[in-house]
Image 1 (tube, rainbow, N blue to C red):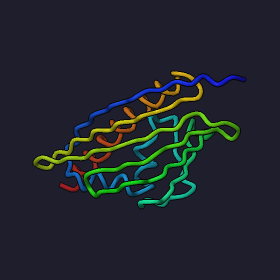
Image 2 (cartoon, rainbow, N blue to C red):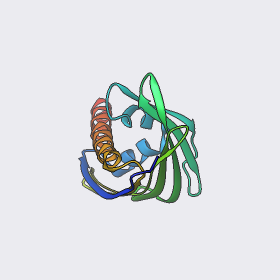
Image 3 (cartoon, rainbow, N blue to C red):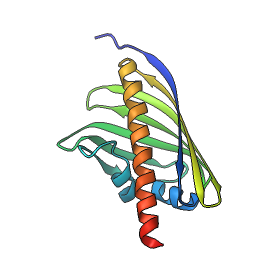
Length: 157
């Protein structure tokens, strides 16, 4: 079977009405990521390995709640708390590589409002559908992150 190579650059901006440190903390905590990371109610993320540090590797499975078929390896290259993350993601199934991405997350704060700028440079080995799915998944996850943090912040105030 010939693999269909596609490339894409995805840019997503998100405003979150909480301080940057809270946004960054939600990235550090795998339990929090398991809450805000799945793009929909029908999907889930299960962490197999959590090593959030420069040189560290996280490994998780994701997909539909009853079928966590996708394996994601995240390698961290720069963690500049609370301003920037630089990491790669390798997405595969048990028998084939689907995509590899370089991801940067820029975090800035102005008066307790955080601006996220996420840039994903992706090479898909299974066509443009993987790029579209990555874009939609990240966009939904970041909306979930904002809703989760803003609701949690409101409870504290």
